[in-house]
Amino acid sequence: MLKKQLINFLIVGMINTIVGYSLYVFFIYLGVNYALAIFFSTILGVLFNFKTIGKFVFENDDNSLLTKFFLAYVITFAINVSIVFKLRNFGYDDYTAGLIAIIISAIISFVLTKYLVFKK
Image 1 (cartoon, rainbow, N blue to C red):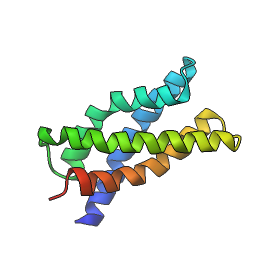
Image 2 (spheres, rainbow, N blue to C red):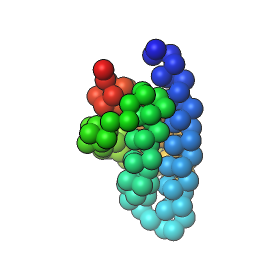
Image 3 (tube, helix red, strand yellow):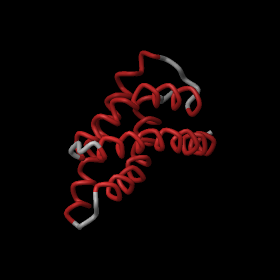
């Protein structure tokens, strides 16, 4: 079950990541600060991600879990911003730092959504 969930999470996560990173790049392109770009792209992606992850990964479309899902995203957001901040200090540009941070955040997101949000 864990293996299937992880594979489905990776597949759905790729789609969600493309959407999220595209939004992030769009906001950076507009000149928005990286932290706000992460914030806006995260907020816009939460509902889409909640439904895709809930339904296709954990086979659960219980809307009452949205608050827990949002909390998991708040935690992931804070970690994401911290990673980008650190990578910028090491000389990475906002685009590359954001991409690296998304990869790390995806792993953290799986653990949080599996064990905090959609636990059985």
